Image (cartoon, rainbow, N blue to C red):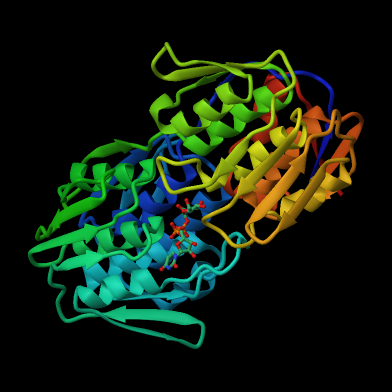
Length: 420
Ligand code: UD1
């Protein structure tokens, strides 16, 4: 087993290069199952979720190999729904994207009921309603989901909630359907646009991704034969922006898209930090004073991302005054606050809200990473805290951040991965 040991107290300074987006990569890899041929995907983060997805694709018959440090070549000429994948797909949430792709391509798909970060109830009713509206029958029993159809017919689908997963999954299922599918009240996160761009590059006809209404004109097949590069990870970039504020440092975040982070930029400015986005594909964040209190409400894009909630929670734990976070997406995303309280924070979390009474300092302690973004928040907290913080359960962090300790170390953090 491994843990991260962080000795805090140094402002983080320097440059950090952002990897390809985890949430885009774990949707683009299964999207490749739609291609009757070969494609190359670059800027793929080498993280454990991606490595797991490679194994899942192989269990469906795909040939996948790393052809560069961050480049994958996939041959998905011969794929089929296989029950060999059930154990693997059960291991993480994004495996459900295989359902949409295989349903569209093979008219039969099955996955083990997916796990993933423990953020509260994570239903799939909207995905299933979408598949059924396209003409599929979906059976959920004995720990697996089986979707099948004789043919899929385009239709209009209204999502009650702008769900990221349902938007992508229905888009995948509709790519090879007959006629036009319209997804109304679609989610607008940057990785939805990225998946649509990938599919269009490979021969699909999808318009409107990034708006409320996505139109998918079904095509006969995707032939691939092209290369695609995954969009930079907005959440990783946001994590380092908040690390700069929390440690009162000065970080230039390279290879990112500032427009994806406008809600965070606005919040950092409100809290007294400084942000420079004049260079186009990089963001410099620096902070010379104690951040001031703020009220944060997480919302679907372009609102404040729930996946940056624990990281901004560290800043608010240290802010001057009393702050509030309202979490509107997930039921149970404040587990990290108990860990921060072990480090001296004063946070009261109840239901979907938490009150942060800002303290001057945090102190190193043994803490547990309860999920992926909580783990990132604990690294930031460890960089601020006086003394030594030991972070356990770092397998959650490795799911979504490539070379995390190396990137923090290059910014001056005293952080080591230790086996125990
Ligand atoms: C994705 C992200 C995750 C992020 C979340 C919200 C990936 C791999 N994961 O998760 O990191 O935190 O978006 O930005 O991209 N819901 C339903 N029924 C459904 C589907 C969702 O009620 O069928 C609800 C969920 O319980 C939740 C809300 O809708 O309250 C948003 O969920 P959704 O956008 O689907 O999140 P994910 O795609 O699972």
